[in-house]
Image (cartoon, rainbow over all chains, first blue to last red; front, side):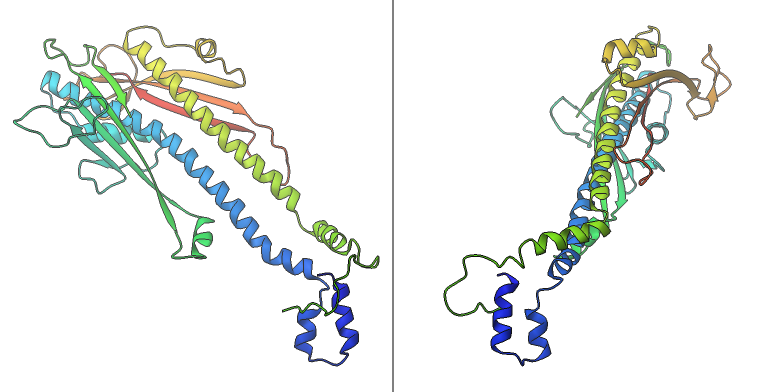
Length: 198
Length: 156
């Protein structure tokens, strides 16, 4: 496969079309190979970097989701405990914002980047049952944070074999269960136990 | 595309061609910043890993601090956290702040929200962590000199 072989052929047949000579000429072949392979190399390095970024964002958002779930749980617990109307979604929004989850807009409808679900009859290890039966009160709250991230490298790489992925959603979920102490009166004075389940 | 010559294959390349590809590659490398790129990728990955670690540590510390404050104990100091966590490379700081239920900032004194409809005082615990990072390649890429993480949890 060395260039030596080619020269043997060239001497044997000295006159040949320019196109054939182009394909047989091996000078500068490494430059061409590097030029073709470099975007591939950079693309894969880029996708490695980008996936790393997704995980870092997910780690931070998990903290934000946990904090928001605790905050919303405390609101539900206070509401059950004292009968005062509280605002779990607003509390979740505020706390997610304190934890660098930008532009949190929590609601119970599921159409925004932060959804707050009250869970009924929650036990550790089970999933959040969002439907109430017979007017029972929630005993846990689930917060789902969704952050769309625009891709910088993954869109080019995925475009090679299909539709390019221009945006990925980083989704984190946290459930906080609470035990309101209904026997004690007074808001904010009792200990409301809250724990996280993942 | 390339036809091999007829006849027995040659055992060796000629002396003239030996190392031509290596030389060509060496010449190309003089113009391509591949080593810088490689070290930059290592630096970036290292920063990501440290940020993720620090996030996890800070969050664990915040949960501990939240538990202490919720139990009516003193807010753990940076030294307490250092003893507990044993991460000498990182510098922590803890603080508390209070708001009313409508997110207006108040001082953490007795009953500052009594004028509001919802009289509750919400106490938050904040733990910040910082860890210096020395990149392998400095100057070419503007990597930050340290990674930061912060977790804020509500205690009541």
